[in-house]
Image (cartoon, rainbow, N blue to C red; front, side, top):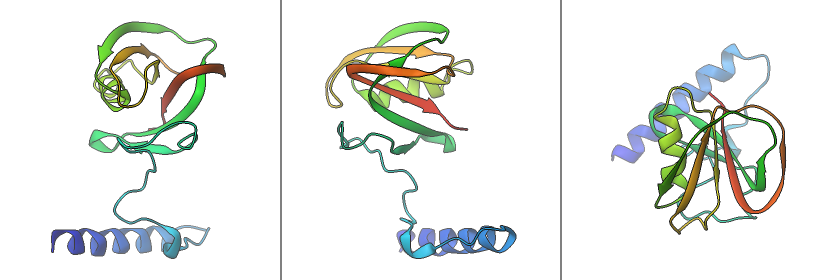
Length: 132
């Protein structure tokens, strides 16, 4: 029942947004329960370019096989997985990008960064950049 209520509210909100928008929104192609595509089960390279919706509404773009070229390093921490890495960044007001070097399900180093700057190819790494 709660899922039905969430869908109704989501449809209403999206419908309202499309009314005030100059670009029509095709509701038939949207997953109304999950705007993003990256989940705890996602893998690279198939998840490249997908959006992860973090806690408190933060949206992140995931890039597989990439790392940052120029960005300000905040700190390195150890997290259990990529999503925990993203969430640690989201909890830091200065953090806008992370690089993670382990498999999605594996524990590994998480590099918190300020964000911005270009990306470069880097095998085995994943980057998430905060969109909002």
